[in-house]
Length: 251
Ligand code: 13P
Image 1: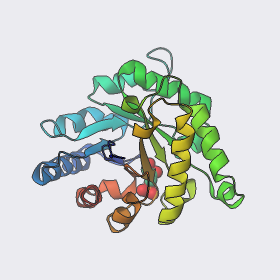
Image 2: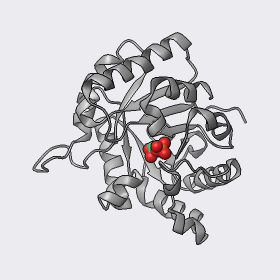
Image 3: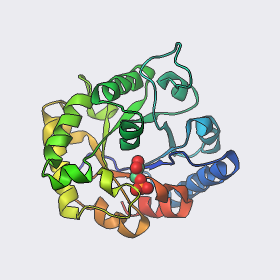
């Protein structure tokens, strides 16, 4: 089957970056993309909300895309400290990460909450990157596939299609630990995710599935070559332009 899925390399900066350094990083990524002249892959940076507007400005004129790391389900209202999907869009974002395991754990976000956030992303014209992944205890208990299926069925809203959905598989135990699943384990998880998506999305075969968890320049080629892997969601290694570009080059 011809591969129609365009690779996506996304950087999740998490709660890192003050303006001066963030702009150097964003410009470094934009310059690197221009120099490489890539037209066959997407690069996305997701800075903290405070920097979305400045980063969007900094990468203007390049093909680098900008996203948020989370959004609220509502478009506006009395939700102190929250950020609406519409606000991210207004600042130049085109994507938003929803359901990252750090938010599931730190903020108690449930699949239902994440689903509402993904719907909010659509309402605002953003593409949600829905994150799923098992904990170490779940993996050791042999529950990986059932956890992934439950999270997908609970978090992906009805009406999803490949142009407006990205799914990121991030095993919780691989995030920030330097540990990664084997390529066979990644391929098996992604094949399972695509199978589950088949019942949820009409064009599941075209949905981009990202792998995330300790991706760096040194292991990117191997992980990205695993079956059904269409890109990466990168944390720590996305904070250095050279390293992030090296991961993108490994596509
Ligand atoms: P690390 O790449 O730092 O392991 O983080 C992965 C992640 O959580 C991306 O969303």
